[in-house]
Length: 100
Length: 164
Image (cartoon, rainbow over all chains, first blue to last red; front, top):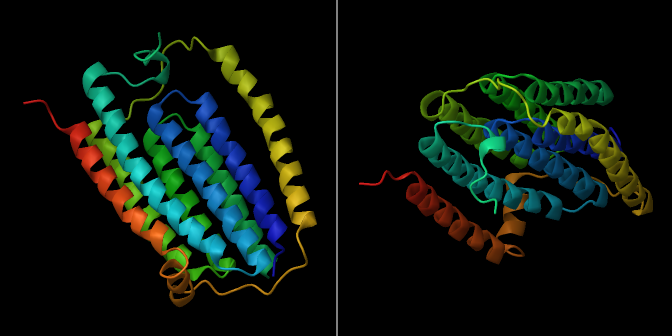
């Protein structure tokens, strides 16, 4: 059995790659996928740490995270589609509608 | 043997995440995301979380990935990022910042994993075990999830409805 700390380390790397994707990409769709990467990394850490403590609670929490992620993706994609219909362009640098 | 499996899956996870970040075409990114989610599902299997592995494949690699690809192919032309980048220097600054962030996270996680007590035997995350916890201790959050999903459905329909 591989020690759980390996899984936790992998999840830290995966989370950082998600952060990098959010910071360096301009396409909101790719930024969204990077957010999914981060959610997955946290799920992996939750499962690994739950197994380390021998409890099932970590996996129950992952279940809820997945539900929230599904709702988040649906609403977020709807917002992106609505913005695209309004502006016909997709770059987060041009979306300054809410800046004062 | 299990270490070989873990290393293979870890390389797949990191490689597909790098592909998602580096490829300019969003469709390629979505396909890399599918590989990534499937590899994480396999990692769940190696952690004996069978139920979560199945849910991961169904919800993430099935529903969410299809939603992404659908949005790119039908609703939004998956255009590549072109044109001058006004914030190019800031984007390069993101790389060392993420490096610092990774070090901080690694230090925090290391203190957690070192301070926690010795390993307990791993529990099997089958349907029965998860269902028992979900419908006893976590019944209220579980019911709240249904409200959340309903709110998401209504919100999506309100957002994407064309004005008459």
